[in-house]
Image 1 (tube, rainbow, N blue to C red):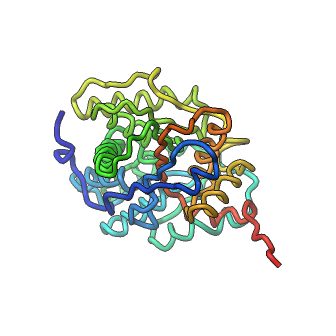
Image 2: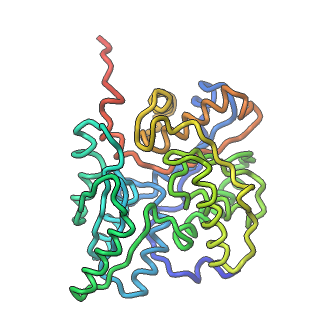
Image 3: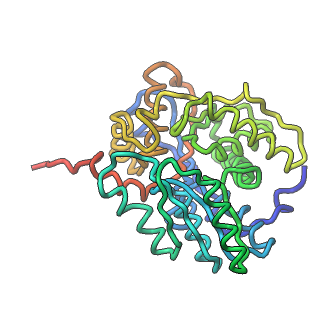
Length: 337
């Protein structure tokens, strides 16, 4: 296997991110010993997991001589925010093609949160209808830039491709090193899974390092039947990039349904409960779209006996905090008079 350092990479990350115990939350849910891998503290643009992927993706973009990056997501995309910030730091133009994929949201959803930051970072923003084919739109935009003499580089939604997931192969090594130093014998790693690249990279990385701990993805945007083949393909392509045999098959992937509610980005009572519980017990800020729903999955799993008192569960906090401010209707300020 080639060294991860042989792949093009730029340094954007504050690493290692901490591995922290959550004793009060563990006691409150009455289940396993919970720890948090704080990838909400990766540094760039208020943090989040996408920075690890962007280190490799933008490393390749610079090698190719790109002067413009194009990516896509929803209106409150955390990936778009971090891409825009990284482009600003590197002096690249950035085009964000944001689709209206979450219906019936309050005005704050279209005026607050990540959208404010996208604009502050100087990105050009194109708003698209929810049913837009964003891949086709990005390809057309790239053609326009080429015609204007520019050199665009397209980053897929979530930064989830073979190169992007290498950021989480590296993160798996980081986690294992921290766990050894801190004597944390974790039995599970849990995260929100949407575009699939983070789960694919972390699962591949842990397996390559000989860890048997399962990486459990809570599906927050699509059903596991749709997401499983996508993640399996990402694992396979990532292994090919590293020139190793894939240690994981589609059957090895653990995906949990039941947390998405009515759809991607739509709040659920269980998510709101999980966000309030993590905040009130640990001062840990989760978001409504990803980490809040994944934590709701952990809580439901404890109540159903999925996780037991002897388990040690590492929750990968993938960030998304700015998105919280786009959902004020889900967290009305309570009167304490």
